[in-house]
Structure formats: C-alpha cells, structure tokens
Length: 175
View 1 (cartoon, rainbow, N blue to C red):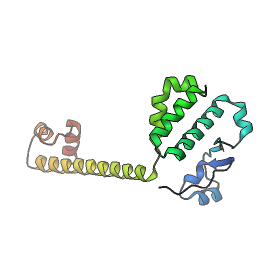
View 2 (cartoon, rainbow, N blue to C red):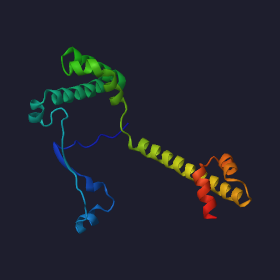
View 3 (tube, rainbow, N blue to C red):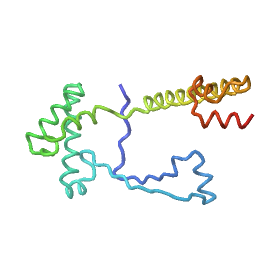
View 4 (cartoon, rainbow, N blue to C red):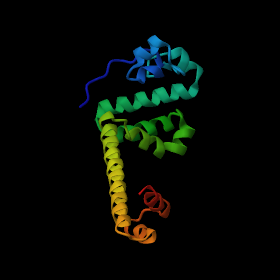
C-alpha cells in the first residue's frame, strides 16, 4: 500500500525549467530560450470552491473523484468503487450525459494509474530493444563488408544481410 501523499496546495506555479538537470546553472546564465509556466489549481473536494462554483463540469468531476475515494474507503476494491461512483453520479445527474456516453473510457482511464516505476521499466525495455536493434544493424554491416571484401556482388550481399541496396552500395564505396 502506498504512503499517503502530502496534500497538494490550492494553487501552485510550475515551470518547465525545473525538469532540466542543470536548471539552476541555466537560470543563472539566463540561457533559457523558452520558459513555460503553468498555474495549477487543486480541484479536489473541499479545495478552491470558488473555482468549482464557476464550472459545473469541474464541480461534477471533483464530486465524482471524491465519490470514488469514498467508495474505496468503504469497500477497498477500486473497480467496484469506480463502478458504484459512476452509477451514483448518473443517478444523481452529476456528469450524467458524459458518463452515460463515456463511462467505459472513464473507467479504463481511472484504472490505468500513472506509475513511475512502470514507466522507468518500460523505458529501460525500449532502450534495450533499441540497443539490440542497433547492434544487429552494425553486425549486418560487418557481415556485408566482409562479403564485399571477398568479392560477393552487391545484390548477393543485399539478399544475405537484408540491408537495403543503397546501404550496401555505400559500404562498397567506403572500401
């Protein structure tokens, strides 16, 4: 079970530059070619009520998420909590039209939670696959060069290695 996160403030200002490794050095040198600043408002239940009053959709979304959390605390089964919250909101005319039309997408989106560890694992796997592919291509080029040195025709090397003809011709020209 995950530790409870500190409550998010009612308002925060986020800057793209904070995502850069050497952001402080760049800021000191004033070398940011572009800075993106976004205003983030917490619309969780009980936060920024003046904003939620102005937007029926935001208010409904805030209520819906709180209802999911309420059901999760009561039954501690995420899928059932989400299903109950969707039904409750439809029955109480909260985001009714949207949920009637898109409840399966909403359910799937909420079920797919962002997980940093999973994202890192996926990126590592992608990097391994990219490296493996690059290694395979380099090996094919080595085989092609060896075959060309032994006098194989460009067409034969193309068929043996699977490299495109342009690459094999370039390799031959580089010899």
